Length: 93
Image 1 (cartoon, one colour):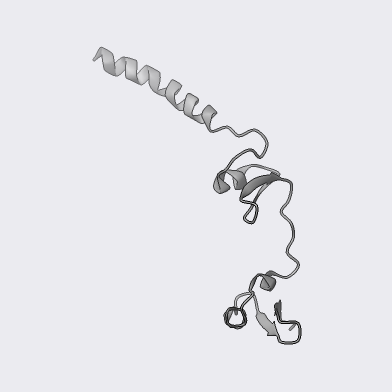
Image 2 (cartoon, helix red, strand yellow):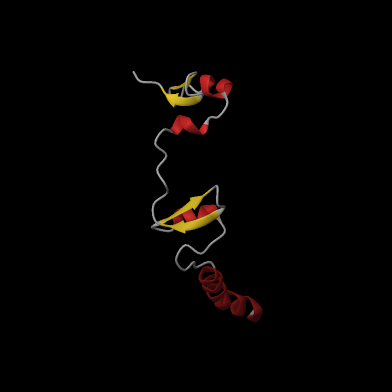
């Protein structure tokens, strides 16, 4: 019974230690989910890290498709293949 009382008394201390161990200063983390939860930080997939500030804005979300076949099948973003430029672009309505 005494061990249960001691364990119950130590439980809040154990949780506070683990919570403080998870504290991240600035954008210094290697975890994309933790990075996304930190104000003024963003995860950069290309550089594989957490960086301060807003993410770089992609002008056209369809430009990430480099393959014509994939571009033509993306109806969610309204993508279409531009044969002259050989790039995927959002189609104008």
